[in-house]
Image (cartoon, rainbow, N blue to C red; front, side, top):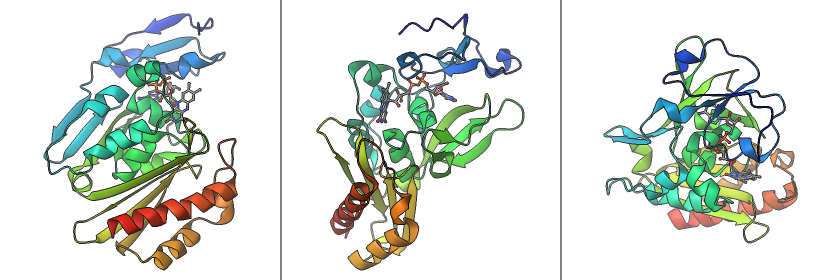
Length: 271
Ligand SMILES: Cc1cc2nc3c(=O)[nH]c(=O)nc-3n(C[C@H](O)[C@H](O)[C@H](O)COP(=O)(O)OP(=O)(O)OC[C@H]3O[C@@H](n4cnc5c(N)ncnc54)[C@H](O)[C@@H]3O)c2cc1C
């Protein structure tokens, strides 16, 4: 849609060129959400593409994903063979409710900043123990784990004008085994639950990440792959019946039921 409140689109070469932040400014990434509804309080868009950040930077320490990396570019990424978790990128991206336009224009950063419970890039990067680098308007960059970045439905820790610069996926997480399950009430519908677990090759350090069924990502860590009973108890301890996200894509009771069901499938697969 045309945003008729926008008077200016800035294309700075660095965030410092933006000057003092005003509440009517908004960072523009792929624009797939920004242009999907009226933005009546926004008069200026600041295009992140003009910073020219490289999309994906693999290093021995892991993978640096620029906030401006397109979903399609992450889907096409092939890492070294020891990064066994790379196929999870495609599994999570394919769980997206996505048109051709979103596929080619939406960014990983935009999806995380939207902070929707069913934000598939939140599921992926939280499960792989991603850490966000944030650039405040004043002050030094800060690091926040993805699992702590999202604080609720459409809520996160960003301060006014603060930029999500990148997400780092550590090599240690990329080399672990994983299993993933996703469920929607309708065939191409928004995820009602997207659950991932990762584990070391010897069955130690089992990490379960529950998303979409909950307003924000919830992680449970076990020293070893749990038994079915231990897993269920762990879920009960972290997630009371009112801890699930109720919306048109599923009642809280339904999401609770499929969380037990899918988590047990994942546990059995990895065990
Ligand atoms: C109707 C609709 C339903 C959708 N449902 C789902 C869904 O269920 N699950 C799912 O995963 N996706 C869903 N999407 C896709 C998705 O949430 C967004 O469209 C997309 O991920 C946003 O990415 P973008 O790069 O286009 O961001 P933009 O539209 O450009 O920006 C989105 C917001 O994030 C801010 N922003 C963007 N990048 C940064 C940054 N680096 N730092 C700080 N702020 C930033 C912008 O200012 C803006 O407020 C849906 C989209 C639409 C339009």
